[in-house]
Length: 106
Image 1 (tube, one colour):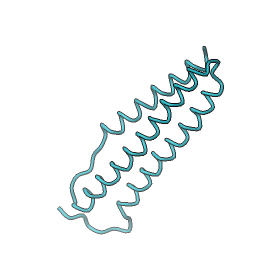
Image 2: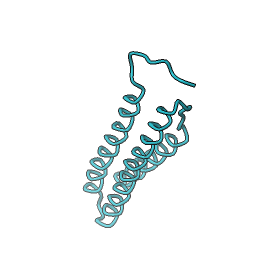
Image 3: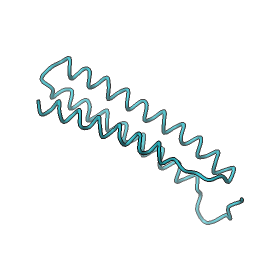
Image 4: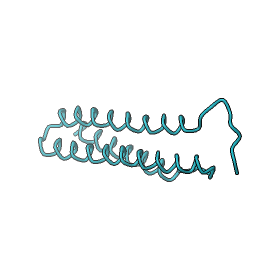
């Protein structure tokens, strides 16, 4: 199935989504640094910072892989859907945010 050309480029939406995930990862690192600084224990703050950095790296790598897969599918004219990836990353980010709130409140 070929998609009729239009005044838009489907690749740009894919690019914007990838950039948004990268910005989200960067902001998570910034918030993680602030939460780690506010924690009363250096061990807890350091552990939280390590977890935040690992999740941010996973988000950037995942966004890059998703970008390449979607680009290949768009060029091939195949259906594109990745709801499971979005739910997994959003769930991880929410869990990390809850951990940060617990550290700040205790």
